[in-house]
Each structure stands twice: as structure tokens, then as C-alpha cells.
Length: 378
Ligand code: GMT
Image (cartoon, helix red, strand yellow):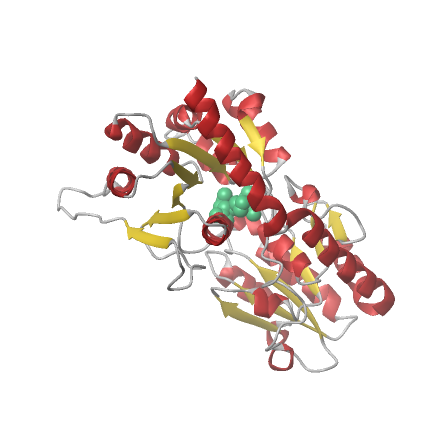
């Protein structure tokens, strides 16, 4: 198939998954066209059958708020026409599903099928804002295919937007288990920590929902009992508060803020525990990537996280804000080598068995086929 993919290309789980999906589809012989405003951050520069179309935005003094949604629709329309796209697969509903619907209307023949993957706050937060709600509902209902990254997110979409359950397919996120693995070289362990220290890691966009100050609070309790270092990967609005919190708790010299990284596999592969104490999380891709690297996950039982961190063999989930409980489990795990090795192996095994690209990408391919056939027959 010739497939157009649109996502947020800079940082974030939805862009990471969309890009990996495009790369895997191209490996399987499909022609893939990324239609985005910047080069997708996880896309290497040249890959066979992979093309990148940058959305061009015209500037005009009148545009205090440039209409990106329209420029994207035009780029989608052009790519669909020139490259005979069979399908446009958009990741994150706002505004991508709307632009895709517009692009198809401009094409006028209904040949291009639209698939929208719902990722999280497009449904649970931003999509519910009065300024977006009606257009979000309209656009997702106009998609030929709808997928959600977890059962939790599907249920939320049915409940909050009145989308019929049978219209949404749950297809979980996946991880490249050849890239995300424990025995990677080079391993940066020696640079990140002293030999006797354990590495506690957090990766996110440092938005309030991630509760990064809880990460620091948990770590402060852990390092009081086990020699350890906290590695914070990513950046975002809450980073200054996390740094202040490390200062206030007297652990600033044990916390390293690495900022944004394109590929986190080489960092995750030398971590001992991954912390994800989020307030809300439709899936938790970072947790899955940690698990694939054999890193047990300690986090919160929210949203779709229990569908990823499935049981206590691979990690532990507590209540939002329970920094004491999460720290206690981290200490127990880090002190007991036998238990840690069992959790690490179980985390890796679960990632490989349930969330590998080899397992999940064919599910997308079958879904595309079904959408194409269903629409052809209707
Ligand atoms: O929805 C967002 O806030 C952004 C989005 C992203 O691009 O990272 O995150 C969501 O999608 C990820 C990929 O499917 C999931 O792993 C995250 O759990 C989800 N974030 C939230 O639900 C807060």
C-alpha cells in the first residue's frame, strides 16, 4: 500500500510510535510518506520506501494564529494525489483527523481511506475543551478506521464522545525489541553513575501530568537507603520545579538532568529502575521501552498503564502521589538482586511477547486491509 502518516514530529510517544510504524511498514514493502511540519525525530535520514513531506506554512501579518490545520490538509492532499496514497493514517486526533478529512474532501473521490489513532490527551484532555470538542468528535466519526492505544482509551472515547464501541479497534503501542534491549553497546553506565550506585531513571516531556516532583521525592527516599543516582531524560515545563525540588531535598548532586534525547534506548539499557508516577497515562510508552530494556517499572495505577505493566512480576503500580509506597518497593527491588533479575527478565519477556513490532505491526496491516475492503464493499 501507499500510506501517508501524520503525527507530532518533534517529541512525544505518539510521534515515536507513528515513526516506528512507518519504518516497519516500509520494511514490509509498503511505501510510506510522512507528512509533518518537521523531520520526525526518530526517523533516520534515508530509508528505502520512506519519504518526508514538510508542511509549508505561508506567513502573513494578519495571521496572529497561522492556520496550520489548513496547510496540513493541503500537504496531505498534494501527497495523496502525487503519490497515489491508498490511506492516510493520522496519530493524535487534533488537528490531524480534521485535516485528513478536509484533504479527502478536496480529493473528491473518496478513494483515500482515513485511519485515526487516538493516543491520549486528544481524548482525555485537549479534545474535551469546549473549543475543540465538537470538531474532535466530528473528525473521529468521519475516519474510516479508528484505533486506540489501550482498552482504557477506547472506553474513554466511547464514554466521553459517544463513539460506538464497535468503531474502535484497540491496537497497543509497540517497541523495537532489537533496538530497546539490555545488552546494548556502548553502555553509558560508567558515565552516568559510580560502580556501586544504582541508576533510577525517568523519561518524559516534563508536563504537569507526569508529576516529575514525585519522581524526585521517590528518589530522595530511595537514595537515603541505597546508593543511587537519578537520571532525568527529557524536558518540559516542570523541569525547573523538579530541579528546585532536588535542591530542597538535598539530593541535587545525585540528580542529572540530561535534557531531550532522540533515542533513549542507550540510556534505558543501563537503568535499574524506571519511575512513572503520572497522574494520567493512556498507555505509557516510556514504561514499555524501559521494560524492553529489562528495567522494572514503578509507577501509578492510572489509565492504560496496568495494560502494560501487567503484574508484579514486571514492576509495581501504586496510587497517585504515594511516593512513600513507590520508594519502598524501589528499595526492596534494588536491594534484592535475585528479585531484581527475575523482574528484569519478566519485563523483557513481556515486552517481546505482547508488544514487539513483529507482533503488532501485522495487526495494523490487517486493519488497513479490512478498512480498504470494508469501504470498497459499502
Ligand atoms: O496525549 C498526550 O499527552 C501526548 C502523547 C504523546 O504524544 O506522547 O502521549 C500519549 O500517547 C502516548 C503514545 O501512545 C502514550 O504512551 C501516553 O501514555 C499518552 N499520554 C497521556 O495519556 C498523558
